[in-house]
Image 1 (cartoon, rainbow, N blue to C red):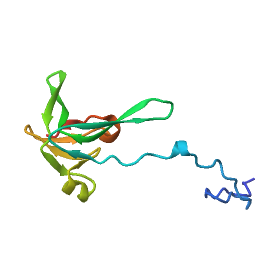
Image 2 (image 1 turned 120 degrees about the horizontal axis):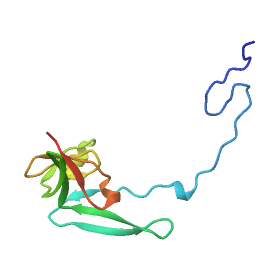
Image 3 (image 1 turned 180 degrees about the vertical axis):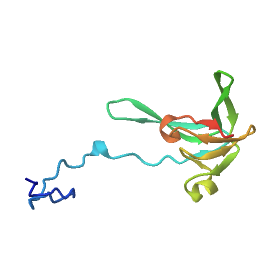
Image 4 (image 1 turned 135 degrees about the horizontal axis):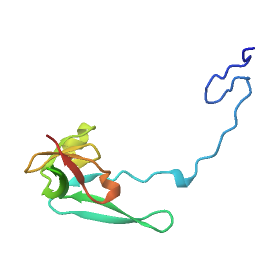
Length: 131
């Protein structure tokens, strides 16, 4: 025999017509922080912020250098280069203001570099050379 009540798969109603209870309320622990708009600059500027549990997180306010992962033969080499400007980003305003985010493409002396980490949360800029 087939199942009489089919599950709808919606948020509020189940298959039987009864309403579902809310799983849990939102708490302050689940709220994120402010967006750290890391900008390209001649000097680097960092700030520390207290996190939950007393640990400290480093926020990068201004970035001057990027660590580039280069793959030569069998080993991987990390090279530090100065950032010139932001070329591509998911937001056109970020290009105009030189704001670095994950996935942004920055210009250096040796070529274009794609940022691979979350700059505002890690306190450093890492990337890979685009070929």
